[in-house]
Length: 59
Image (cartoon, rainbow, N blue to C red; front, side):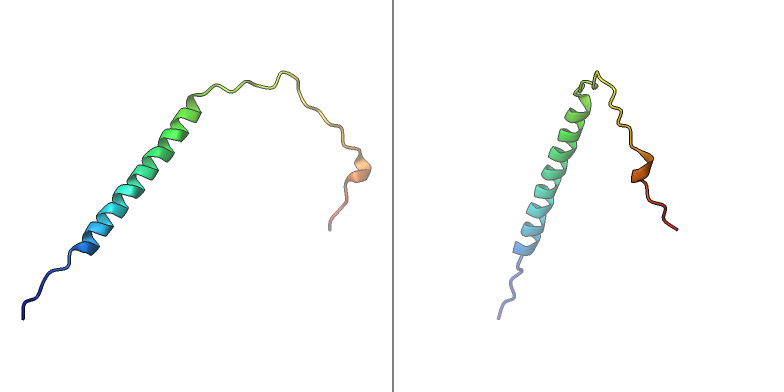
């Protein structure tokens, strides 16, 4: 009786590592690209006056 070595689990783990690495590279690439985009600032300053009667004192 001969024993055979089953190496399919190591191949599966290697493929999983490659897939996770590609996902991480894509994620960091997307973050890098979004950080380079210059989003415009709002031109009008937003100010909302809240009356004092809306506040509740919590003790």
